[in-house]
Picture 1 (spheres, rainbow, N blue to C red):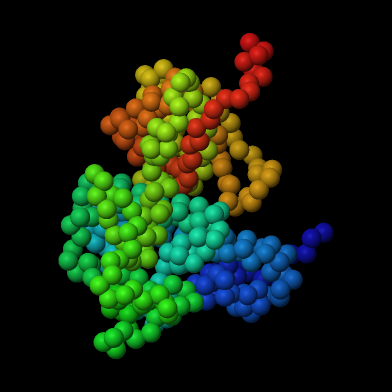
Picture 2: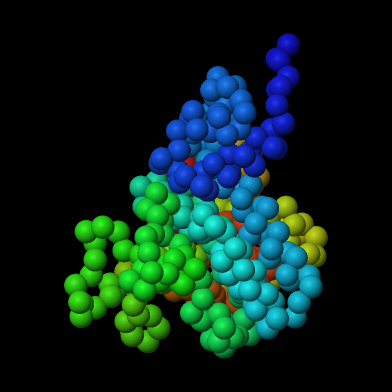
Length: 353
């Protein structure tokens, strides 16, 4: 009979979150974690695997108790404009009151871990995408963000990345509280030099993002977007099959049932759009287990194969106003959704027919 755990697992994960948050992923050792969690190294390995697996669990707990709790509470209590103000107010207030200037664990991870670990980077992008979805769900959320109250525009931008504590600014103030971004030693930009160019904005205009949070958020937003240019570069000389991989939320973001319920509402709308363009859904199935790979990085719940007469037909659907309306339910229901364009090289079913 397996021995029952002699510690509170939920409490241990919370302590692991605090340890990673305070020290950063790379500087945190297994000994640091076992000391913080109050368990032995062997018990830690038996319960959570290695440090990386524990970190993935810690990120999920942080997202649940911080970001997701905040979004659900604010959406339930405030109309759209006030929801944006309340969201920013709360983040800034917590940042200013934190004497250690730890910042946001998700953003810290996007800066310190994601560039070196694609799977963790994908997880973080999904979490940051939920914040983006929160703003997009609000009526006219995109335009409301352009009118953020003035008091939010220059306060509490970002802390220095984990392991690189910011020193006093030239004025002697704490950069964590003033919003001044500290530069790492040896990385100071020469006087008069332009900030790094990072992103091509709408209408071909170049936008600059010298703030790490802006850069991390832009990277996460890019993953969530439709990759029109990549698809247009491919030859469009016949039908295309799109592989859909979906992971559902426990609850729909609008509170109307489960994530699966929201996805069914999305499907009812999307099927009409697919058929109108000559497409068809020819296979669906539930994902039972990850047979090869890291389970936490590939937690899909559902798979669908959809065939379109051309890539142009797919893009026409995805960029249509009707699909934008259906997409609200997709984002309500899916914590993650990847669509992969496939070119057929072999099909035994086609031979059988």
